[in-house]
Length: 242
Image (cartoon, rainbow, N blue to C red; front, side):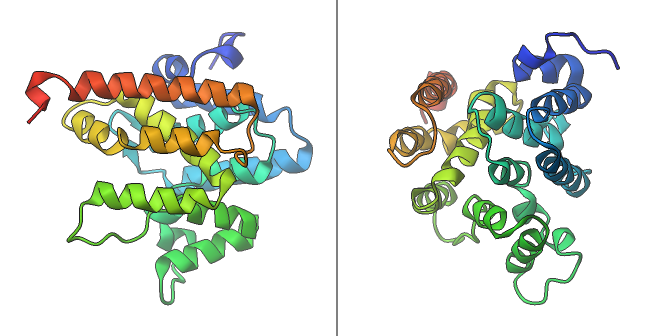
């Protein structure tokens, strides 16, 4: 497939709409050219694993891999992340939560999550496993509000893992700012889930130990503002007030 010469500067939603998964894969390839051979090999291995684990998964209108590619590309391009462990964890941030048995090759023993994290550590190192663990949802109490528990989990988990904040805010941006690309009832449910997280992420990103430059933080604050505008447009209409 032929891609335009300006693919490396195209907005990711435009690449997704026009070129789909092949375009995002090519954009990922362009981004990883800045790394050395060993780093590219690790990033390619992580991408291959993510593609295999999520091969049958979809997000509304697209292959699930598109989401993972956008999270990783955003880390590299917009957040200027050069830490390979962080990008690997970005590609695999949903692997333990969604496919623990497959990740552990069926050898789960007791807790599938623990087995999957151990397999991830064996393959990519303990730091990658720690970062993925920080963004992996726990088992929630069915007697309590799920969105409230999600907020509490992120506040604690991301509060102690600065690099995990960076991964999760890229994930949030794809889900939150990208809510306009969602269709059906999930539009409202996603807006209700993600809207309370805007001030949390604003606080987390503003913290001095969040390892991003001031310019990148300003970019993220702008994206959080945009997400809030979109949530308001969805939720603050008269039909949604009840």
